[in-house]
Image (cartoon, rainbow over the protein chains, first blue to last red):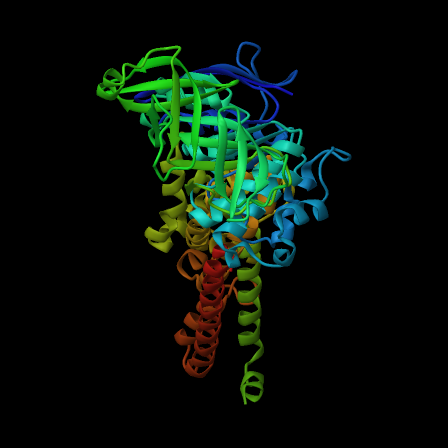
Length: 367
Length: 236
């Protein structure tokens, strides 16, 4: 099912005007704070009534201001994972989890309690009160509560923002599983590129209340207009071998990439996220340097940016790798489209592409 | 010891104690649903006339009780517009009856009840109610399953305060329903009456002790419940 959102809404000093589609999978609403992400999600949830617009999941219309139709929140069949969890303090974890189930239509398709409890590893918490949970535990219970409402659409508003890195790494895989096995579209708000690269099927980039870019993460993350200085590339890779010295060799269209040993079987598909600032370019194959990860590709585009930098895109098979270098370097190297070029990757972040991978936390490894 | 002391209460004194408890209980329980509604409305809704409603609710706290009693007499007396209506259509007579005492007590206690409940409503994070609505609860279910359980300790505290106030109400009661033994003579009016007759000091003193005991118990109980509010809302 595809989620269609068209909204316009005026606040004092802020205008929101968005129109986008979220195909099945996980769509990240991406943008800096104040760009209108939460407003969009609240409008989809029915917690905010926009001035005008239309919101539909498949052919099920949640809001159509032209037809004067606006379902109240409790009839929208959502699972909303809030940033602060918003667990009910007077109910046990079990009662929190089952809260939405009470109101879901009988026989609505959805996971049962034991499956969700297993998925999220919250079995030992069931009889506790939310006040006795850690931040990560609260997040997992909040996710479980949304799932058990048998939703037709899952909304998540920066569900990881309040967590430290270790807790984020603990929760991220659950969203990956949801994306890969849930079948329910997920609209996920974030301003973190790492989450975008790991989770997104589709990215909708917002800036000041408008959609400035939308599409697959590889495309949007490399878009300097959308990302500013945070541009990154997403490469597809496959686990080739686990070497004896503790490294795992990944095969990409531009050559081999080595990362710290991954707990993934050879043949497993992965996503690599490479920040554009973390790429060094060379016209000749560099030798005598410590970097292991050197990919080769042809320059397809050199896009000037504001300021002293340019963004150079290399084609690596079907993927694009962007490097952010100074205009001076580009001129000195006489870079031009069509040239063969070598990219030295300073940092690579690995994210699983398929479900069910037990990956070590915090995969940003310098190699 | 208390037992032996209590048996020394005369029938008139007992009657005053029983009547007070009855008036206090009826006044509190009958006004509680309205108290919750008004507290919720004042805490959450914005509507025209909100400040007027707030003022009317709090007026009995500030007005001399005699004025409140006089106004009750004017409106709910046999000849008053409300009194005539209740008498003709429902056969309810309030003036000079214990039901009138309960009405006076309820009105005098209402501001205390509303203030306690309103504080509890304001302590409930509306985001929790929003979360409940996204999970499929309609507004009534949101109130019953989230708001009400969270404000329940505040409601209990408000009810206890109101009960203590209702039992001790004197000025409005004696103005509205007079001081008729067995009918409208509650604890304070009985104490007042005993003090007017020679040799009544002993009975008055016993009733004073009982008043103090009831008031202290109510206060301690309400403190205890209020402390549980914090624990409950923090969810520990």
